[in-house]
Image (cartoon, rainbow, N blue to C red):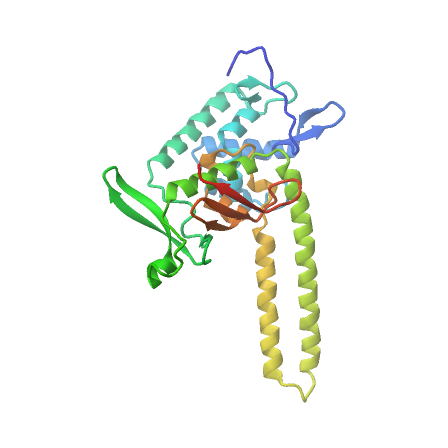
Length: 322
């Protein structure tokens, strides 16, 4: 911990887990209920329990997240991140905090940091493929077809590229505008910009409003579908009705209803976003909940986000290669 005389002030939008905002004093107070849960999480982590094991333990005891949801690998990993552990110890950017009380002491802080560093080291020893492949979100910007990863051998070793799979199958004359694009260029653009967006202080406020509007829209659709199903069930009782046709329509409506339920479940919750997310913390789970489609062009990529990325709730942006 730094002995600098300067102190750090928390001035975020949503209080970190374990705290609640005191508007009168403009400070953070410890939330006793969340604090108890957070200390249990830290205790289990110090006992070498994995993030997934900790999540299962909390769920087994019926303990919910701040927003009343089940715990998962991501929400626990966020609480055990470097910045979150430091905040619990009363530190931001190696400076002591000025307007919040530490939850853990120096000994607990150093124990948790050793565990976090050990886990990070083990991740680096694993072979890590592109986080974007296999998600069915990469598309050719020219023909809309799927994009696959391919490798070529050069003097410097193996280099991976993205290419239009339809062009590969149908021949060079199909989708002539598409080119081989170096995989690392696309991956870096996506990860770097997603990290910046998720670290935007206004995101949580925008996300809350976006989720509210989306849930309201989905709920209205669900209500309309249910009304149609109810109406068809009434029609089905008529002796002169083609029951097979009605059953098929009901079946189709139920599929639509299932899709809407999946859309509601896929909405990114503020609980899924770490206190401050680093590029290393962006994983497949985060990408699935934040990006719906990536269109690859020769000089830029278009990313379609499933979350708002500015105050106007915009969800699409073009990014040029560096």
